[in-house]
Image (cartoon, rainbow, N blue to C red; front, side, top):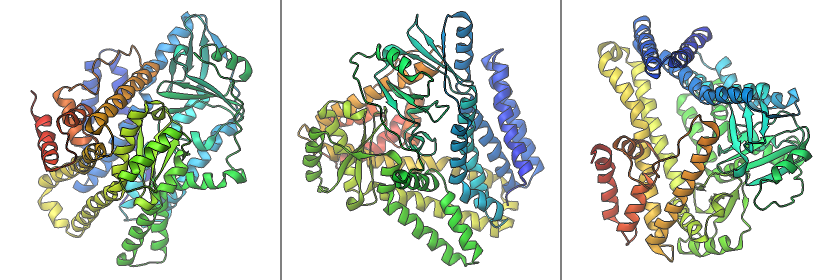
Amino acid sequence: MLPAWFIIISYLFVGISIQLLGILFSRLSKRIGYIVEITIAISAVVYIFIQYPFLDSFIYIAFVSSGYASTILLTANYDKYTELKSEIKNLDLIKIDLTRNIFRILIDVTLAFVVFIGAITFLIYGPTSSPLKFIIAYGMVSAISEIVKRTITFASINVYYNHEKDSLLIVSPLNSRQLPLEDLQTVTEESSVDILRLHPYFTLFSSTADFTTSLDKVLKLQFSGETIHLTFKDTIKWRTVFDQYLSDPVELEEITILPFYHRKNLKRLLGKLYFAMTVKGISAYSGLLLVLYYFDLPVFIMIPAILVYWFVNLYFSDRILQLAMDAKPTVNPEVIESARRIFKKANISQVQVYETESTEYNGLATGVHIGRSMVTLTTATLQLPLSAIEGILAHEAVHVQKRDVMWGQVWKMAYFIVLFFGIVFLFNHQEVIMNYKIPLFFAIWFIMILFPIYQSFYTQRMEVRADHLGATFLNGSTEQMAQSLSMLARNQDNALQKSVEYSAVNSKKLTESSLDRPSWIWRFLEFQFMPHPPMYWRVEMLKQNKIGWNKSIRRQWFFDRFRESFLKS
């Protein structure tokens, strides 16, 4: 049963307070800040276990942790804001006027409400005892924090141009940047804000930063690792200024952006909303469940209905993600020819290559089976040499060939089904809870930790198979695949470094490449909790094994997963 809203908000506030007090005391000393956070957190947990029944305690602890985690995400950039505020006082800067219109943020908030309308309706009218209410409320906390961050950024943002240091300063308490204009790659002018691309719930990649404050013309500034969107009052003036920093300025025509409600955008709008409701949230599922509850259908009908709806979403996932990413078929003739040759070897000739605008270096395969699959590369990835792109295409081709998207969802669903029946058993056998509190306490925490390990296990096996089996589709075999992954890793490292430099205080250059074998603790985290094995290991295995995917590689991955995780040498 979901607690009263006042109690939920109270425990969210406890989590928020723990983080804020930690920040406050860390100004005296980082160690003092950590001690304060740990002390208050332990005190809160002890109080909750004393005050409430055993299983209910985990609900309250979850809301405390959710409030704490959301506050960390919101305040992660605050030190940069403090640094820039200090610089503003001491430097001769030019403040850039922005166009401001309250309707801009109201549109974002309204679309967020539409996305969560099914979940909100279930919270209000759903069965009082439904565990889904807790899942919805817990999940909405982090989602709402995104809109809170966007709203505060809209209300507080100021932008400055530093002519002496050739940099652009974006100043807001929760979202500040210091952007060296020597890193500027392209400048694009758009007729209006592309809300369907910028809304935080409608994007799959996180490299796009929305600082727009009106619905007027937009300057899109692409840096290494991040793309910035701003609405200047004098767009022509500032475009001229920024063009001076481009190594090869190209006069591009203004891109026409239609309103999100325009009839030509209707399919795109509905696709984005559906993506947000089903992939990034559970509003669609909770809405369906509420309808099933309304007609008082038995459980043996409700569960298959939900599973059928889940499978339908999975079946159409390629089209949903295509709309979510604004992906379009690539027109690069060399990439098309390479994909044709590689996909033919993989027996997936009908699969197309799409591209989506992003400064992230990434590629992904989507679709439940070969007939409904696609391979998508980001525009940044398409700037790599053709030999590297071929390695990525071959890797993704294996994911399509082996239906890894479908099997990944099946394995995940299997875990949740087992978990569901475990929860039902406990609710129907209250005496077990009363008699085995301590074992159950450890069992619940074990299950929470086990899920990412379980998920990492089957996804990493898929990734290793895609590396080695994909290498057989390349003319350069495992050597080309190793070089492709190495180049991808170096570019990802460089983009990450730039992104950190833009938003962090006193950022240091990364001393270790992802191609270097890191310390024991990082190897443990990557091998046990991440969907991909560490890049250094993947490249080394490709250099050592030149005969494709076989039992010896599977065996080596399985044992290395534990050797590299638990042996410090």
